[in-house]
Image 1: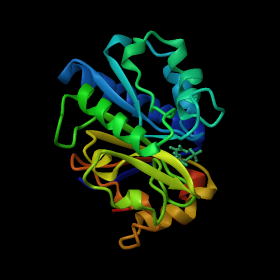
Image 2: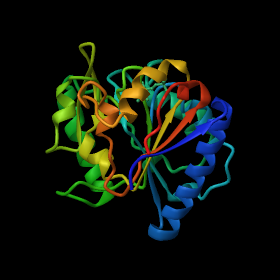
Image 3: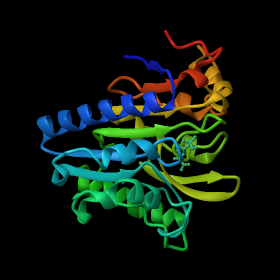
Image 4: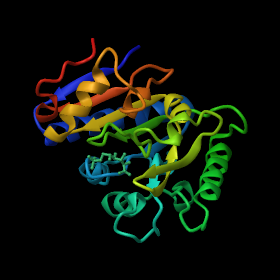
Length: 242
Ligand code: 6PG
């Protein structure tokens, strides 16, 4: 199944729809596998979704939280994706601490941190060699068409022998899920809001375009999707995929 796109009236409606979809997918994962493994997106768009999830009534002990990417900064740094999610959501609910897996960012070598996070994912997901499947992967899309920390024309786009790698944003290291890991996700949900996303969305949804220039095009999950939630502002003059 190819990408599906829902256009919501505004960001608040997008967040509400994302909340409903994520709750449904969490319940499906728990019903089918006894737990839900969920990778969070960073950036600003998902923050109100995390704040809504903080008010949900969920079997928190069945959730296992990862991050699809992380800035290479200390955990208490204002740019930390983990810090944002903890403040908006995770600090307010009873997910066991040992089931929250922030990306390690204290090793002087980002490549070592990426390898360490890969081992954590493999150990928790019980998949030592093949590409493991998370139940839910949340993604945003940058104005340049990047997702996670898979930035245009960077080496991380080509990594297919690992599930976690080192991204590069203007020379700054990031830790990121690789394309194969994202594409193994059982449910991959993109959230993109605002007029600034229009140029990249036009290229990402186009029948043909350079995926190295617009890395969100590389996300073609084996299990179908991805599912996109965009708001009206982002959708202006954007031809949606058929
Ligand atoms: C990050 C994110 C990144 C983000 C996009 C969109 O670490 O910044 O993971 O991929 O999702 O840049 O960001 P906004 O939601 O703020 O537009």
